Length: 151
Image 1 (cartoon, one colour):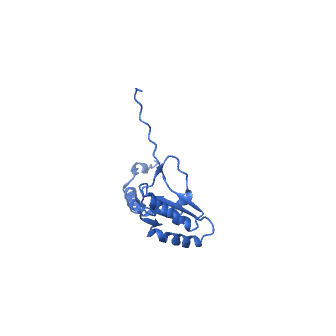
Image 2 (cartoon, helix red, strand yellow; image 1 turned 90 degrees about the horizontal axis):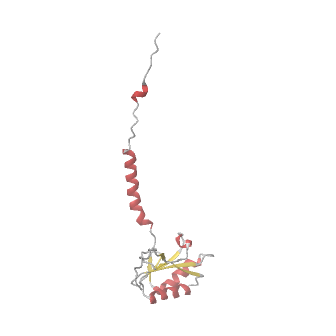
Image 3 (cartoon, helix red, strand yellow; image 1 turned 90 degrees about the vertical axis):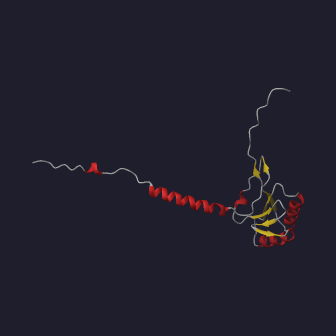
């Protein structure tokens, strides 16, 4: 009586096929590359850079009222270009449906003319806004270069 031993473990292939995983990763990369630029809402402006900005989490909400002033003096309410004198009425229309959180956020270009920004602030205040938030960016802190000797 002999025992018949089967050696099935010798036939097992333990190599992992990574080709499907690479295909999936490439598709996801392409999707993210296409979608990411579309996530940016509003108008591009080079905001002023400051050392200690006040965090304003409400500005990131979908229903936030954001006014942008470009370098050339163009005024945008959300992503719609408006004339500065029509801004007051547009903000009044948006605020009419709100009972709380009557805050408007201003994204002004760092090189915009002071008069253009002051006119926008005046028009926003004329609309009856409770609070006006000025959005800025955090300045990247760079270490000071070492001082050389000599007085």
